Length: 479
Image (cartoon, rainbow, N blue to C red; front, side, top):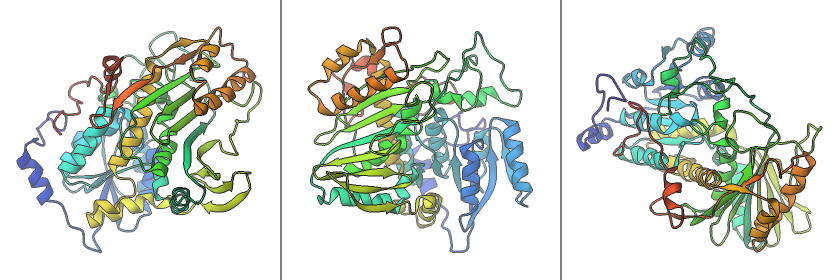
């Protein structure tokens, strides 16, 4: 376990697991829960503020591989008379036995490893979405949470939204008839990240070895180290795994599915510009559950060339549509409405409770009841895995003419309808599909119990289920 500590902080024996389970701190009503935040740039700063507002929580440590970002956050807390310890290396932080819980908003490629290490170190964990960078390590995060009896919550905050909960219960009640389709939408503008002609300098404030962690430590081949890692496969998962995992989770929640689907197919491309990004900015994915599938649409381009307005579908740009026989629900994070089949409004479901996700995690940390978590790590794993499945199909795809794509899905009404709207959208953005064609991925078959692909192309697909880890930043086989 050299990856956790240079002094071999923990062993992975069953005896060690028992020690952690037996040594779980029991919190009294007046006991502070001591929280460390790892990855404090951007969303990490938001989490510092959110957890600082939760009664009985004390932020005691911050960690980041960028010393400039870290120093700024430490100073911000000091200015509020809150002194915290600071760490560059999360392994050092995990040695601190005074820390009860770890909250992390690192880049995606660190999420699962940090979760496993923190569980092994006896810490409860709040891990931002997506909870994993690939399917295999997401399952390992679940196994670690269960083995070490830790409370681990994913950052899919919509699970704490009472209004959304009520809306989905209404859809499931049958009052709108049977559910026919769960549609996720992410129409969000994403411009070019630029194109470089060679390796770029690493910011002086960044410990690049720590920043890369489990990912390959290659040269920086984009203008910005921070944030644009979302659009590179070694560290990110594209828009479907960034914003889209929220909507994917809402759809799976609506349908009550607790396993992966038996099939997936995806198409799309990185269109409208040439840059150093690798992930698609335009994507359609079908998670072929039975009896009700999930259909995901990503659009990163504006409604048409020369405009700064995004498309929408039934009034939704980023959110979900639950299509039923007698109407539908349209909404998401900001609340929504149910409609009858003629589009008349039935009932509004306001945003309510979404800001209590951190409170929910702390409640479970105190109670030690898994049932208190609204977004347990297992839910986060399954929803992230759907995004990974879609991306794997796309990554194994081939450039395909639009008429062939249309013909391929003519017998699938959901895909056919989505494609029939996508092609005019691309034309409106002056995309010449003869020069920059769409990529059509294969239909991949999944064994939901094993969380492994089977059938044709299984070997190629399973090669993307798990990554090669860079020592010592290795997610262990036996957590």
